[in-house]
Length: 267
Image 1 (cartoon, rainbow, N blue to C red):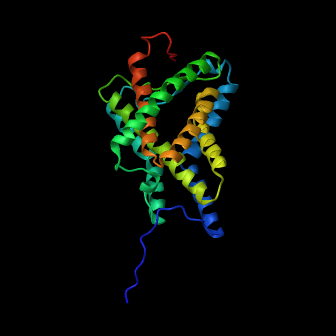
Image 2 (image 1 turned 180 degrees about the vertical axis):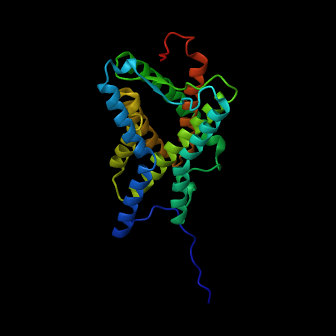
Image 3 (image 1 turned 45 degrees about the horizontal axis):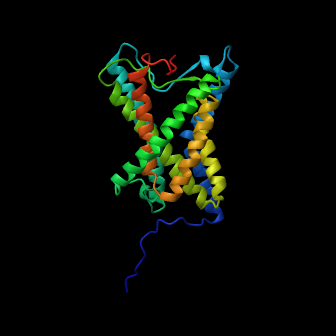
């Protein structure tokens, strides 16, 4: 008689002790290859800015800088290479989920509800974008934040498309790893929900610390909100959309407004 097996479930399993050690090691390695390493780098950068002569407000943090000044085609190649390689940890997470019989769909990363995701993502972006800008301007005026320069790319035909791709890459990397993957693994490790939210939010804030105190705390608050919405909706996609829209508006808006309005700090 043939043996009938049940399809693999995508529910969160309770790991045995050896499995716990494997999951803990996996989480450390994934973060060390991605946003955890960025957090350490941001801390070093922040300490360097903090201990250098002058205040934080007189220093700049460039998000999308040129890699080959006066050589636009080489610069474009470097920009696309950087975006592609930054997404490798996302594919690693997809591979690890596949090995456990699951996929990114268990995190709500799919195209099954595009309009639902777009509508909620747009609403979240509108709510967070304005308050985030106000927090940044206030922190910068108080001398607690560096001047954030979204781009110093040259005025060439590919500048806006590359900035849009960079925004989408940032959103995919951060939301898939810190929101979906990390919270799933912490749940599998039986970490209490509140503690998992704190861990995820502090990790999110850590890799924005290079921007200053305002960048850190602003992203911690954003992390808490995203965790709560993720728990309510069970999907990363609307929050990925929200993050991408926030960054697209910030990057492209800077190109359009820098030097033309007096309230936007520039380097």
